[in-house]
Length: 558
Image (tube, rainbow, N blue to C red; front, side, top):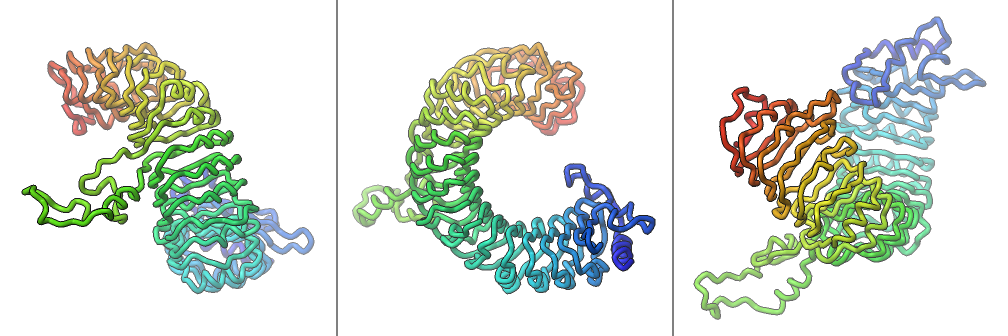
């Protein structure tokens, strides 16, 4: 009876409200406590599990239960001393703090308070739960964990296998001594500071390590001398970690996901990357990698996502050149002379230095990239110096039958516009690629999944805008600005009259500026009721605008 009373008292301390949860829990939230009543044994209630031998409540799963209200510091929940699992994720307890009495539940093995809108400081008493195997406080946007409590937790939780503190404000040095039992560790967005050391990679059971979005994490990627790690996912994206990626990265033979984007890595991507034969996702964008894309990447047969965009030359050669000379103004005969090299330093990208213009990436994309037949997404955008030969381009499009995202913005392809593209493609960006040829109807056929098509700034693309005879395309963004496409815009641009809800009437953006379009403004564009941006400037369109003013007219450039 005591357990029933405690649970009913807990139920009565909250309201049920669906409005907070319509976008959470994949639509699977429901009020578990609503059915709780004394006419049934509490062990049969939704979310409640009891020990079959002694009848004690050992598990309480009220995740996604639409609970709203203040969590009382002396909640009756803390009378359930035999609890081993407590899951209150995806409820709304704001602005309550996690109660100090949480430390009374000494038998807890699994505690999940993620996405529950708890606020303020996490109590020291949470570190008393020394039997914990998993602790999830993730998405605790207002939660703060002081350095001492964090250290005590890591010291006391000797059986801990899963720790997720994503978005908890720790503002602490990165831990050095952590439990060897850990399998999953997420300290992303926690304001960690310090240097990433080798100790993380020597943990015998660690499979997932997420340290991303901690810009006070510095230093270089440690050289690993021992390769028997079980690590399957490593994310240090958007940290201050810099320097060269060591050859020893190739010893992480179990890795499935490697996320290094938004760091300060420089030098070449090591050939040993080809040893990561289990890898499915490589995210290397927005660094300062130089040199060629290693051909060993073709060994990565399981790769589904590859992003090498936004990388650049390092500054070492230019700095060496600078150091070879002294600057003296008296020797100059130029009225406008100034010491351009004086401002050169490693704190800024060399491409922003006075007198320097960069080829941001360089070299030919290896044919071997076309062997990655399992790719779902490929990003090589902003590859200003990258070249992709016509044959490799054709082979890629033929082999990548599962490809959904392809971004080659600013890669020099110098190839005819492709005719046959994968029907699985949702996003295609071939802007600034020196494509040539004629835009044809195949891009707009209903068999395609294309939602975004970007072909802008290819002045060798010619012909007229194709007349579309079938309308049930998923296209939401179309950009063919600054091409050589000319002639009249056909009435069919707005007459995609299929009753299918996902037709071109779903278009959000059309960019047709700086072409050679002539003739009247097509009134059928008014049928595009979801249109938000339309730019048709710098053409030779003539005649009056439609008399009926569309809702998006404020966004339109004439």
